[in-house]
Amino acid sequence: MNDKSYRSFTELEVWKKARGFKNEIKELTNSFPAEEKFRLIDQIIRASRG
Image 1 (cartoon, rainbow, N blue to C red):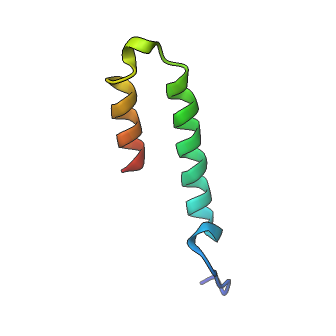
Image 2: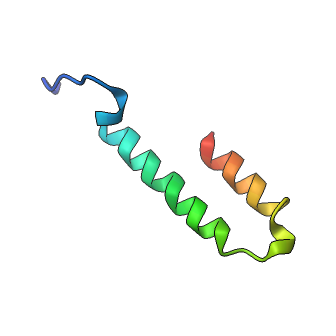
């Protein structure tokens, strides 16, 4: 087991990777056409948070 102690969840590698993934999804959805704004984008964003 790792002896490293953390002061905040933001120091966890898994949190950093999840945050990076969320940012990538946000960038991807920003490139979608306007007509997809409230359909596919909303679904992708909700799925990435789950």
